Image 1 (cartoon, helix red, strand yellow):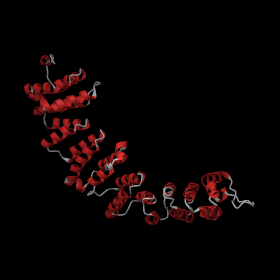
Image 2: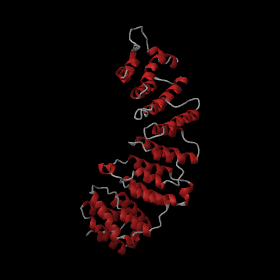
Image 3: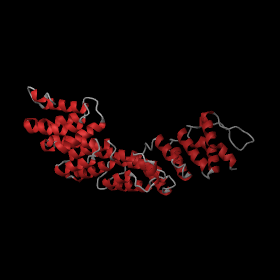
Image 4: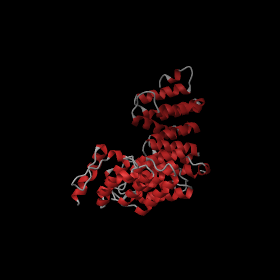
Amino acid sequence: MEGWPWLERHTSDALALVVSSLLALGRPDDIGIFVAKTCGNLPQLRPGLHQVVSAVAAPACNARRQHILCALQDLHERAMCVLDTTAVEELLLALAKFNDEARVSNILDELTAGPQLLTKVVRNFLACQNLDAALFYLEKVLSDSSSRESPPYELIQDVIKVSTEAEMSDDFSTSSARAKAWDALDVLQDVVLNADSALLFLEWSARQTPVDVKMAMSIEKLLRKAGPVPVDAFDALVRVHASSAGDADKAMDLFDELVRVTKADGPAEASLVGMISSCIEARNSELAEHILNWACEEDKCTLPVFSATLKVLATSTATWYLLGAFWAVPEMMSGVLASSMRMESTSSTMPKLNGSFARRVRSCCVGHIWSRR
């Protein structure tokens, strides 16, 4: 600072270097007044002050986070009068990045911010996990006419990801506090969700304990209002309604609709296994059998699909249906599984199975069957 007046040329780069030095020396509360006095004497430096703000927000040298925030706050309190619009915007984004919600609000009260700048504010609040602030400013982004005509889906998906992946603390999970995913959905009520955004909500619904059927039904309603329901959405909807909190009849109807939509290809093996496995909690043997029957008819009943069904049946009251499945498998599988099974004449009423398939079948249900006879 003492050598500053003796420089041959006073430039924005030189000012940024001095500011960085003050930050490295642990003197962040001197930065605001130094910048204000310097630009008062050398007004030609004002157009380059955004570089100074950037040097504070992302210093080249190691600096404590609290020192950086203190320096940014000092610039806001003592140097706002000399900052031009570009520098003010840079300061705004830096304060959002450091989660200073009050000063961000104060700056925006005086600054006319368009959707592009507000989008950056939203992303910076997301980066510091302040979802409430991100949702507040996302609502302002969506209120702009250009956003209504062409919604910023990439930003929307980032917000949904944070809201649906937010970890609940013990206090939150045991209280009546509302899930953040619902707060995000409220902000997006007037937005036509694309498939990726809707699927994030549906997958979140299926992961909850108990399953959040209300959320899934809200998303389904929005999707059907916008047009055809995406294929991946059917998978999640079936899993939601296969649970004890869901509607078993609706789950079956949704699976049938999925089959019609996918036509000849049908659901993938992983999808079939996932939908069948979701029946375990509710012991929904009817839906598991329904999906298995379709898979057999379409020659898509692989070992994972059949094994998943057996696990569901083993937890349900369909014990004798399960026993019958052992005898019926060679015919239903159209040769896919027949080679994995071998029946031998024995005094036991239970067929003997060989190979890896036999081990998987026995491990999941043989003990269950004989314990309930």
